Length: 332
Ligand code: UDP
Ligand code: MG
Image (cartoon, rainbow, N blue to C red; front, side, top):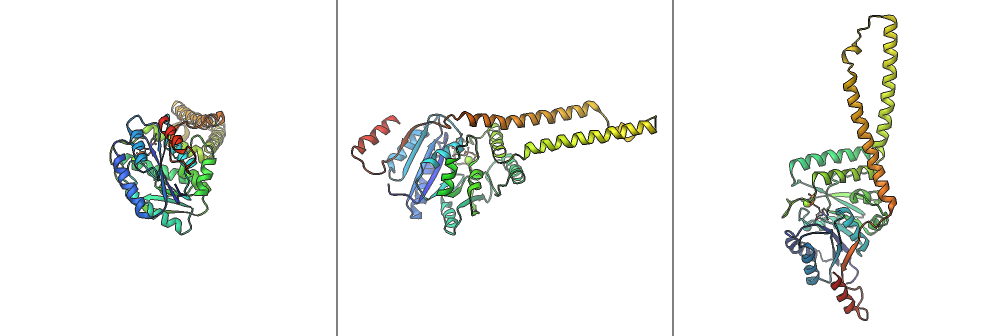
């Protein structure tokens, strides 16, 4: 394989139904670009026939295909990192396997890089997802915009292109729970965005349950901002200050108007206020737990994922290279 200019990294988790169509459109689109490319599929511990399909595709196009096979499911973002750690291209494009990101749009991202940008984010023109996903995603984009320094229009769009330097920095970051578009953004010197099309999922269903989506958004917030913790300190200060002022008010009132029936008496309900504060305290405790849990995962320094096999052609035909390749295939 000559050094490719473009590496396309695709995480795959239980996508057997859509993979044949993806192979068909992706390779056709890349061939049409007339650049030296490689495609790196990372099988994220699929339990269906995805791994077998990827192996077949590797055998069909071994010159431009590489496959990393995880032994278990580690999540989309770690799968992309595994691709980043092995890709060889000068420019790296990420893409979902379900054809929601049309491969025909890759040329647009590369054109933006030709203009000198090192980070090109896709913005989905019309989003073809369920209404609750669209609303939740808008809210999260707004929240991220306020809590972090990361500026992007559509954080959920995985159709993006990065320079070699950015991808190296991401791979070197060694983060356990992360959000690639945001992490990469922190290393970009000239980020830009382009509008891209978005399609309905071709086959199968979304691999993100509501629970997984919430976890992912916690990764985004905790990974790039301490503002939530600071908000809690400030809220604590505000509550103490209000309590102090109220106390002074009540004392003075009692002193000067013995029969106190002030406005305060109308709105004061200690039980309800107590429940409200307890709820907030529990939320704050959980929030601290989110940060602490991630610190715990990070300091244990376990391997972030384990690779069962890599299917690839040896870079240069070595002596005995064929046998080596066969051994690799056998292991897979
Ligand atoms: N994916 C993955 N591991 C996971 C979940 C998802 O590799 O644990 C892959 C999935 O195969 C797809 C991409 O990540 O290529 C995006 O997933 P999906 O389309 O289900 O997410 P959605 O479009 O619903 O946000
Ligand atoms: Mg999808």
